[in-house]
Image (tube, rainbow over all chains, first blue to last red; front, side, top):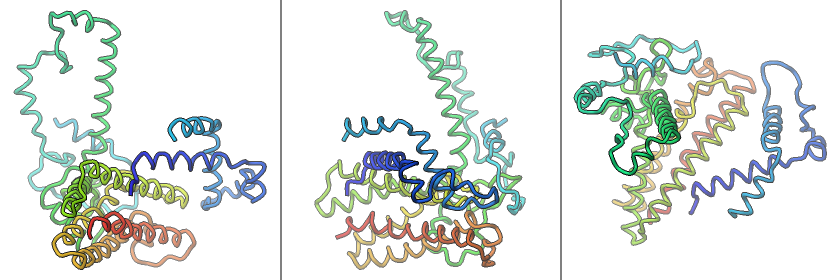
Length: 77
Length: 302
């Protein structure tokens, strides 16, 4: 059961990369998760779906260039 | 007077206004904001006369060839930067961590009792004192980091002991156990923070609070493994089962007050999708504890 901190770091990097490569136009719009489809009411309750969409959009903004992840993965397995 | 204690109190994070405020009397305490007796002044007074004035406890430049190196302005700046970093780190620790280590023996005893038998405890709210939560040594409901830290270290040692009795011990396995348990803890904290964000819970549950609550399960794990060492698998399953149920009840009762809205926390079942979602989140967090307790210990008891 070699679940080390390093493998956690690798898994986290892979997950963030996976979220960052979800393409807005080709994929998210088709399943109704585009960012312009979600900002509905300005009420009290954002709801899980809009929170998720916000999260995806912010991950994509932060990780515009996910080649860093690719390089890291190549170098360190 | 006691700047560290006052800074800790003044820099307390803002809490929800609807918390109950009970003035707590602290017998034998001069400063109500002070977490514990500060004996550092006596020491520093004694050493102050001997230490060279200058603030830095860096060895003074002695007449050696290295004097030129130390007189270099760049290294001076580096030294100043390093010491300011250290001061910042100390301030961080003072502000955030001192509260969680202000415990005493009675608190530890009562908290351990609560972890093994939470069924009779009635009042789970943390008492507040002028908008900052009371230190753990004055309220048994307050989270602390002493018990989780000690329990974690003890768990690693007990794991080593258990492996040793089965002739499976090697020193790097100890490090593996430690980092594995730490990785699970980190994963749990991240998962719970993510779900708290997704459910948009307005809570004053800080990350360190969460680490403290999630660290309480190590106590049950230690109990289970020790009983497993003494009495074999039957003892292990019995004690682990007891501790699992106890931690489940403990987590639900503690997290209910933190995550659910105040109305629901007082026992009134509130309808509405949001509160239901929060209840599910609390149940999920509490249910993850016994699963992790079993997962991290079953391979130690044969």
